[in-house]
Image (tube, rainbow, N blue to C red; front, top):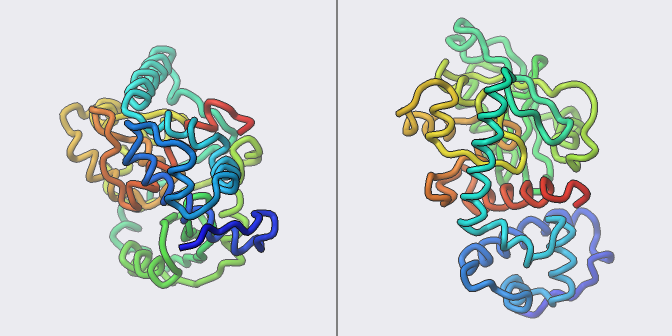
Length: 295
């Protein structure tokens, strides 16, 4: 395949946005697989069929840091250091009586769980509007109710996302309405430093245990990491790491309920329902922006 040397500023915006994450994801997969060997710019650019110059520009525009710096955020050593730091932050927050350590950005999320009666009704009488939008991590389905955001999934198309919504909320009325969800999607994925305004409300349907786990995840600051055991201890259920993992896997609101910030005790990423490469992209992207808010 020939190198794509079309200047990035001459690629139509829609085409560029649709291709950026796909190329970056392939690059991240390559960088992760070869991180121990510290792959250079030439090899990474060749892997995604771009010239060195255009790959460097594309990657830095997306991640806020160079590919070389990004590789540092993908190592086990870096993950272990972030685990230790996160534990210190959470311990300090608990010691001073705070419900959480405070976020490093202004997007504040509130979480409301449906009542037992509503849970049993499976969304009967509820109208859910949804749409698929571009995000820094690929196409994302955003689903909203009058009481708040009820779903955020990374999907290939609206049909796949609607199928998931029907399984989660079989009694609800689903309306595809991307015009209604676009402002929320833009707010979710705009640069962290520009987040302002009132809290973004989430409405979730889950068991009491699942909701406790999801609330604990909201206390993890951007750029931080925790293990399944850390989350289990946080909710007062030490020894329930396996159950915590199951609850994390059922998280209905990706990114905002940051299940991607939970990894294995060894520092390995572990699984992610929307793909391990996407999880690596999210973690390294957050680490880059937490290290340099101007990225």
